Image (cartoon, rainbow, N blue to C red; front, side, top):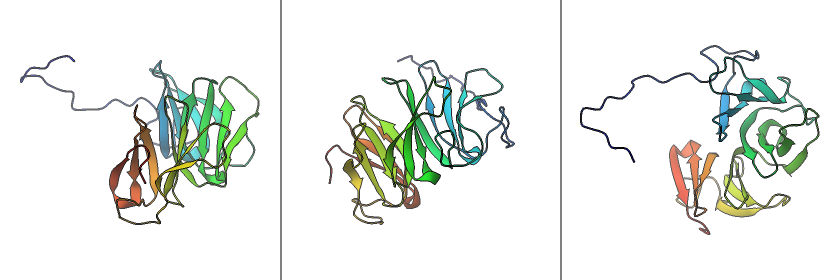
Length: 205
C-alpha cells in the first residue's frame, strides 16, 4: 500500500464518468440511474432505471451504448421495465439484470444483437444482485424483505438473510436493496428503509 505524508492533499471534486446533470433517453444522458457494474477494463454497465435500459459506458467516452432494453418499457426480452441492477457473468459472457418492473431476473448474452435470453428467476420484486466467486447469484427481494442465494438454473434459492418479516430487529430487513458478497460469502446489504447497512455472515439465521 502506498504511503502518504501528513502534507498530502486530495482532490476535492469528483469527475463525471457517465451522463450529466440533465436527463433524457439520448445516448449521452441517463435518467435515474440505479445499480452498476465495473468490468475489468473499467467499462461501466449501468441500470438506467428511468429509460428502461442497460447502457455500457467506456472510460473517456462522451456517450454510452445501449446493450439491453430500448428506452420503452415492456415484457419482451428486448425490453425492460424499471431495471435496478446489473452484473456481468464472466463465465458465460452474459448480463444478469434485475428487471424489477417485470418482477424477474433475466440473463442476456452480451455479444448477441438478438432478443434471445432466459428468465433465471420470476415472480420476484428484485432490487439488487451480486455474484460470488463460486458463481452463486444473490438477489434481494424488497417486498419479501429477504435475500436469497441461487445456483444458476435454480428457481427457488436458499435464504441467506431476512425472511423474519419486515422490521428493525437484527434478524430482519426492511426493503433490502444493493448487495456485496465477500470472499467468505458474507453478505453486506443496504437495508434501505431501516437506514443502515447490515452484514449477514455465511449460514446466519
